[in-house]
Amino acid sequence: MTESAALAARPVQARAPRRRTVVVWVLAGWVLLLVTARVWGLALPADDLHLGAIPLYGRWELAPVWRLAAPVAAGAAAVLVLPGLAARWPWRRVLGAVAATAIGWSLALAAVDGVDGFADIGQAYGRHIGLVDERGGPAAFLRTYVEHQDAVPVHLQAHPPGLVLALWASARAGLSGSGWETALAMAGVAAAAVAALVIAREVVSERSARRAAPFLVLAPAAVWHTNADVVFGGLALTGVVLVVIATGRAGRSRWALAGAGGAVFGLALLFSYGVALLAAPIAAVALWRRRPAVLAVAAGAGAVVVALPLLWGFWWLDGLAATRVQYYAGVGADRPYEYFLLANLAVFALAVGPATAAGLARLRDRRAWLVVGSGLAAVLLADLSGLSSAETERIWQPFMPLVLLAGGALATSAGGARRWLALQVAVAVVLQAALRSPW
Image (cartoon, rainbow, N blue to C red):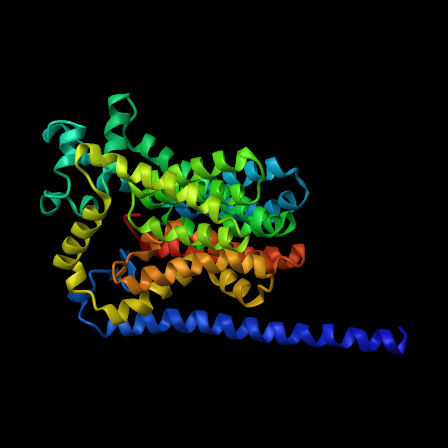
C-alpha cells in the first residue's frame, strides 16, 4: 500500500471502533431502560399498574420446553436462509418470502400457548358481534355506538366499530371462529411487512429494503402477532404505502393511487383511532418530495371514508372523545402517567429488539431516517398522549414495522446480519417461553 492510500484508509479504520463503541453504549442503554422500567414498576402499587408481568401485560410463567421446538426451528431456519434470499431473489419473490416467513414465524410463536395463542380476537371482539343484532342491525349499532360506550366491553370502548361490524358481516357469510380470526391477523402481519418493505424501496433504495427484510420479520414483536392491532396495522400501512408510491409517480396513476391509499387509510381509522398517527410518514414523504397535491387528494379520500358512517349516525371524533372519557374512567385513572412515559418506551424497545436499537445507532441514510424517524415520531406522540398507558406491546404494533427497518443498517455482511438476527430470535423465544399473554 502506498503512503497516500494508507492515509486515506486510516479514517475508515478509525471509524469502525467508534461505531462499535456507539453500538455497545446503545445496547447498554437498551438494557438499562428495561431494568429501570422493571425496578420502578415493582416499587409502585400493583393495583395502580394492572399489569402482572411488569412492565408487560400478562404473567411470568415458563412454558414446557418441548413447545419451544417450533419457534426455535422456524427462527433458526429463517436466520440461515432469509438474508440470502432477500439479497438474491427477484423483488416480487422477496416480498412473497417476507410475507410467508412473517406468517410462519408468528404462528410458530403463538403455537407455544396452544389454542390460547389464537383466541384474542375472538375474546376481545368476535364474541361481541351479537350486540349488532341486539341493537337492531348495523345502522342502529352505529347510531347508538357512542351513547352506549359505558355499556360495552373494554375493547369496544377503545376502538371505532369497524372490526366488530366486519366480523359480524363475515359471520353472516359463514366465516367465523378462531381459524378465520387468525387468518385475519396473519393477513395483517403479512400486509404490514410487505408495505414497510415497499416503502423502504420506494423512499430509500431497493438495496436498503433487501437488507432490512429479515429484520422486519424476525423481531420479538412477533410474540404479540395474533391480536387485532396487527390487523389495524396491516390495513393502515397498506394505505400509507399506496400514498407513498403515488408521491413518486407522474401522470394520472398518481391520483388513483393517492385516492385509493387515502380511502384505505380512512377505512383503517374506522377500525382504530390510534393509527391516525401513521399520517406522519405519509406527510413526511409527501412534503419531502414536494407533492402537496397528492397529500391533499389522499386526505380528501380518507376524509370521505371516515365521514361515511355519519349517514348512520356515527362520527369518528365523537367516538374518540367518548373513548377518552371511558379510558380515564377506568384503568387510565389509576396508571401513573410519568411511569408509563418511560415504561411504554421500554416495552416498545423490547418488542423491536436489541438489533433495532443497534441499527438506529448505525443508521446514516437521511432517506431511511425519513421513514424510520416518522415511525418513531408516531410512537413518541402516542406516548405523550397519555392514551397508551401500558399494553404497548400490542397497541403500538402498527408503528413497529417502520422502525424495524433500521435493522438493515446492520447488514454490512451476511455473517454480521445473521448474528444480529439470531439475537432477535433468541429474545423472542425467551419472551415466548417466559411470558403468558392474552395476545
